[in-house]
Length: 294
Image (tube, rainbow, N blue to C red; front, side, top):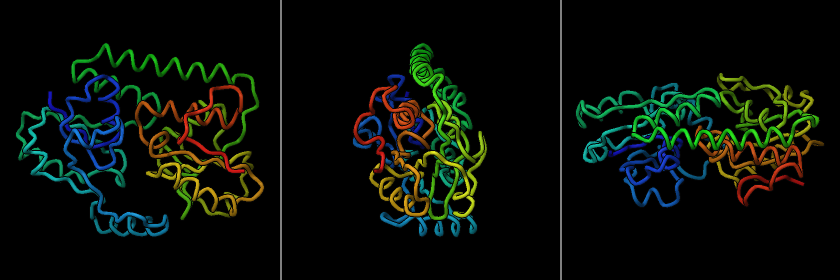
């Protein structure tokens, strides 16, 4: 089977169930498994220049969204030339998704025999269900079941490690300029890690409070998880948050890999958060996942 993955989480799902070699097309953000962009064609790119500060990114996103302009570009001709049997995409977030018309036009070039599977999880269980759906579609249902079972076992181990301990109140920020509280599966990750999320919307969209409202929240710890950014950028932004919300411990996490990407590595994110919230209860994360600002 020839698989085109138009979202990084789907790429990780395909790899987790042992079908990475079937990937013929990926996105510019796909970085797991390592080297996948060298083995598969990159057919999705961003229109945003590199190095923009958070406030500028927010402004550009709002402007392009208001004008109905996409934030990502699909190379339709390249995708069609690859003749994929299965295209994995999503329609969860208008900021993260390709415009629907782009894929429709590409399908017209590829041909009607290509199947499209949309992966649109809103909760953690729906993320696991998406892994099962992908595995079933590529003929690896047993392997997908084993992957999901392993992820659930790891979550159960975290739950047992933090059981009975006081649950710190966690203020998680997925953007800082302006500030945004996360929705969808992210508040659930905090609970799975043994914390109590402040604000946010389970299974829903992100919300944008003011800094004054955030200051009034009784947070025991602040987690900075900027959407689409790795750990280095998260640390840089966490230093800004530490100045805006003084007197509270601040944690930075590689959000792009372990928080906002609805794939298997969300469990790595839960384990990293649990280590921060309950030191000594779980194994220390690998370097590059999380940092506690002192």
